[in-house]
Image (spheres, rainbow, N blue to C red):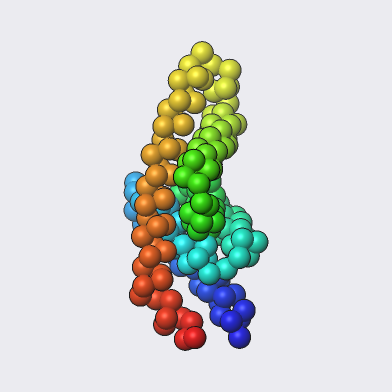
Length: 171
């Protein structure tokens, strides 16, 4: 019975993330906010489901978010949506230096993926003279956005545990 409820939870969180993501069609200028709220909706999946079902939900949500109009918001969900699923596992690490190293690795990998995607979308951006500066700007944006995602996914997980979990799982 608990497995069915976890599956329903995964589907409900993915649907809620896509519903919030689709709000970016109404107010397209706030795509950073809608992407952040859609990513936060994946926090219960990271708390309750395992790593493999959580990454499956993230992958399905990312593909669906990229198929909707307003590509920028879908790209945010695709690039940063895995973090609320990984966050409980990173927070469970005992050593603070290991947690910080994992966060730094996530920031570097996400910013490199974003930089390469920007280079692919906008042509010869990687071969330009200012590509180093562009990578530093991308790295800074990724670090700031992931810190904000970390804050919201932490608060979303706390809200899930304190207010909503007992309503969903009546154990």
